[in-house]
Structure formats: structure tokens, C-alpha cells
Image (cartoon, rainbow, N blue to C red; front, side):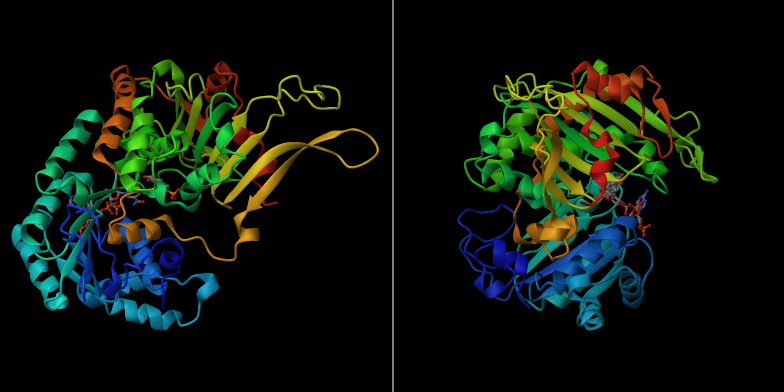
Length: 532
Ligand SMILES: NC(=O)C1=CN([C@@H]2O[C@H](COP(=O)(O)OP(=O)(O)OC[C@H]3O[C@@H](n4cnc5c(N)ncnc54)[C@H](OP(=O)(O)O)[C@@H]3O)[C@@H](O)[C@H]2O)C=CC1
Ligand SMILES: O=C1O[C@H](COP(=O)(O)O)[C@@H](O)[C@H](O)[C@H]1O
């Protein structure tokens, strides 16, 4: 089966080794420039295969790629972790996580069994070069002397990233093909630890071999952001301080840290969501048009945005933490009720912040971020509020304050993916009454395909050597520089988060912060979030 994604997007189709495109420049990761990889193999080793992310996201995404015909002809998947497991046990574990897309259920069980036959397991320590040599031997058995390309997905806690990089690069890297390593967040806790992680990894890997994943960059609507802006004349000329009043980047989850409190307490919502997912969206949103769609051109522009940003100030931040709440007879636990979280934890589970890009395009435009767990809804969206129409003829005359009813472009990343534009419109009839309405592109109405999970896109890109959606080390440095002073201040001054009930709309302080910049959060109208 041909990989529809590749047919539509990439020329030529690299998943078929015999027609892989000659690369013009060396990728620096072992791919040989100009030499098509005849009969090559690709192995993907999921390090930390027994863990939550591997089960929840990585194996299902690999299966989806296989199902869509997007994996190379000769591929093998290895699970690697300390837990003892046989190949059969790994397969049973993976099998329990697999489903087929609703729109493509035919041959599902046959496909699953074909996929599982390509999955193998090797148990070992993360710091043992000997154990990685054993993995290497098994990989070689499967590669059968072909050009072997190897991907390692580090789905393990960050304290073992460097050990794995060392062992994999010394004992299990490919001698003839490329070797790439996907690294999961968190990439450190601040500028200093992130710098240490980067230099630790670079002792064993080149920057070109490292694929730092931020799965929000793989989300369909985030990918669509640049297309919306750069390929529609109606948007690009408006994309500046001249027409845009503020931009809002909103993330909310309707569940707490359930099961991940131990991890979360060391990071908090600012590191978990804002410094990476929301900031990446901001950088993509605010960048200047890149010279081309080449990964380096895009990442160069993102870095410029990040470097133009003001360091976040404490007075521009509100932090919160959810507390227990009883609703409909159900008790929802507070953050500190989690056994793995200290009772006196000050870790924020909610934050709102006002950020500024101090360049000519965005001077004075507040970029408001809001992220929280255990809120009233699950939502991720980008809101662009435009300025009011100067000298508006209809101002206040027809039942609507048009200073408030400005245009707003909403890119709803999830759930119910959509792009809609709020406009003012005349209510039909003989009278003259204005109505606020939406021009609405709801994906489920327009497109029949299920939207691929972000991990599918990112894994496919990594296999192809497409680094556009992965974070470069200078991007990471610039991102940490914005947040590190604030994070240190919050911790050193032991700032207490404002408590909010589980399932609520979060701390009221977020409204005061927005009001300080003459902004109203756009996500507060509940009617907007129903399917239309
Ligand atoms: N889960 C998620 O939703 C997300 C996770 N991430 C990141 O992805 C990575 C993997 O996440 P996740 O699967 O949840 O992590 P887990 O805690 O489930 O760990 C993955 C595996 O690593 C091994 N492991 C666990 N703790 C340690 C330890 N202290 N030292 C050495 N090995 C350990 C275990 O395997 P074994 O004991 O068999 O060796 C475990 O199965 C992490 O970096 C995480 O921050 C990022 C975004 C979301
Ligand atoms: O990276 C993370 O993302 C998830 C949310 O991802 P989504 O794709 O389900 O929106 C978040 O729950 C987690 O805390 C964070 O580490």
C-alpha cells in the first residue's frame, strides 16, 4: 500500500528505498549524500519500551504508519528496557494498544499480526554498553548485511538520556547507514540543566543526529498554521501589530496529574506546557516568512522570534494550583492529595502569562498564554483578536458594541479541530440588527479522513530525516532564556499559587492579568465550544 501522506506531501517517496532521492548536502547523521539507499533497512528501537509513552503513543503511531504503508519495506521494531520480557510478551503488550482507523477498518487484524511479526525485544540496562552490544547483534541479524539505518527513541526519564546516547552510539550505532536519536522532553529544567543535557548528548551525537520532539509541532492544526498564513492573501497582510490586538495561546485539560504527579512536581505547568508546546506555537505564529520550507530556514526564523522576546517578568504571570472539589457527589482530588506530591508543594498546575516579542512586527502586542490542568474543559487553541474597525459606521447604533465585537480568528488545535473567523453580520430581515457569527471550517464536516496523531507525523519525519518539526539546540537555549529567570524567582521567593477548584475555570488572577493589557480571554464563552 502506498503511503498517502508521502504521495501528497513529499517528492519523491523515500519510504521505498530503491527510489530514495539523492540528498544534496550531507545530513551529518550518516546518510550518504547523493547515494540512493538500495535495499536499505530501518530499525526503530524504542528505549523505555515498557513505559507509558511507548504504549500510549509510540507503538500505536508506528503501527498506524505501517498500516498506511508509510514504513520502509525492510523495517524492524525493537523494544528495549530493563524489564524482562520475551518477544511474545512485547507483542502482547503492543497488541493491547493497537486499533485501526475507523475509516479504514478492513484487514485490521491481518495488518496487526503482520506488524507484530516485525517487533522484537531486548532487555538491558540503560548504562550498559555490553547490553547495547547484544542489541546490536540482534539488529545485525535482522539487517542481513543491507545498509542499516537505525533510529533510537529515548522514551525514558531524562536522567538516563546521556547514558543511552553513550551506549547506543558506542555499541549499537549503524556502521553503514544513518543513526538518529529521538529525545523526548523534558530537555532540562532551566537554561543551565538544558545546556548540560545538550553538551552531554553532543559528546556522543552530532546535532544532526538529535531529534528533539515537541509533539505539539506534529499536530495537524499547528502544522496548518503556516499554510493558513502564508498561502492566503487575506491573512498574511494582517499578521502584525497594525491589525492584531493580541494573540492568545490556550491549553487546558479537564483532568489532573493523575499518575504523573511525581514527574510533574519537579517541573510544573510552565515547564511542562508553556516553555515548549505553547512557545513553539508562538514562534511559528510570529516568525517572518522563511526563505524556503527547508528545516534550517524555518528554524532560523523561529530562533529570531525567540531571541526577540522579553524575559518573562513575575508581574506578568499568575500561577495556580488545583484543590479538591466535590461535584455531583463525586470527590475530585486536589493536586497535593496525590501521594507522590509533597503536601506543601507550591508547584503550579495552572499559569497565565503575558509575553512580548520586541521586534518591528509585534511591538506592543501581548501574547497571552494560559495553561492548566484539572480545569473545566479539554482544549488547545490559538486566538487572534484583531483591532476594531476605525470610525466604524455601525458603532453602538445597532445593538452591538463593535469595539468589543472585533474580528477574531480561532485555530482550534483540539478537540474538534477547526479554523473559524468571528465576523459581524446583519441579521436577515427588514430591520438593521447586527449579529456576531462564525465562518467555520470544522474539520469533521469538511474532511472524511481521521486526523493522524502527532507522533505519526513526527516519527515519519524523523525516519525521512526531515528536521523541520524538531527543536534545534539554539532554539532550546533561546526558549529557556525567556523562562529561566522567572522560574528561579518563583522558586526562590516561594510564590504561593492561587488555589482553584478541580474542574473550574482556573484562578481569577488570570482575568486581572488579561485586563492589565486590555484583553479578554476569548475561550470563556462556552457556546463557542460546541460543534456547529
Ligand atoms: N507519558 C507521557 O504522556 C509523556 C512522557 N514524556 C516523556 O517521555 C519519556 C517517557 O515517558 P513515560 O513513558 O511516561 O515514562 P515512564 O516513567 O513510564 O518510564 C519509561 C520506562 O523507563 C524506565 N524507567 C522508569 N523510571 C526509571 C528510572 N528512574 N531510571 C531508569 N529507568 C527508568 C522504565 O522501564 P524499565 O524499568 O523496564 O527499564 C519505564 O517503563 C519521559 O522523558 C517523559 O518525560 C513526554 C510527554 C508525555
Ligand atoms: O507533553 C505533555 O502533553 C500532554 C498533553 O498532550 P496532548 O497531546 O494530549 O494534548 C500533557 O498531558 C502532559 O502533561 C505533557 O507532559
